[in-house]
Image (tube, rainbow, N blue to C red; front, side):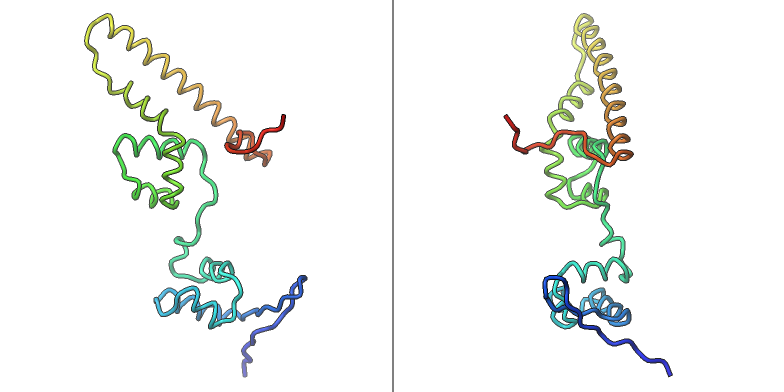
Length: 181
């Protein structure tokens, strides 16, 4: 006869009581959530879970829709710029970018506000009409310089990305942080 493990009551280092549910109970809760029988709040109450994070962890582990809960935490600067370029060029909508990059609409909008000026300028230069041969030569020289600058920037951004990943620290300046005098 196989005995089912029952829930265990534990106390954390701060003296708070919490319940540790066995695997089959977690799977049952996730099944009910997947089927829409319970909301996360209702599951927290029913299964005596203190934090929403615990339920989300169960969903990441046991859900048939794991990909919805397994969001990549970080996007590279190049991915953000590409998303903004696609949005400003009209290739995709903000909602499509949310699905494609698995980010919230507010995240995508913050990317657009941060990178849109450079993307719009690049589009305008790429789509500019040539009116005269003199202007055409100037435009060609500017386009060539722009392509070289973009290539250099891309190389430097890649170098920064690789350095950040290898050495596990941020190189880029954080916007909005208070500066020391």
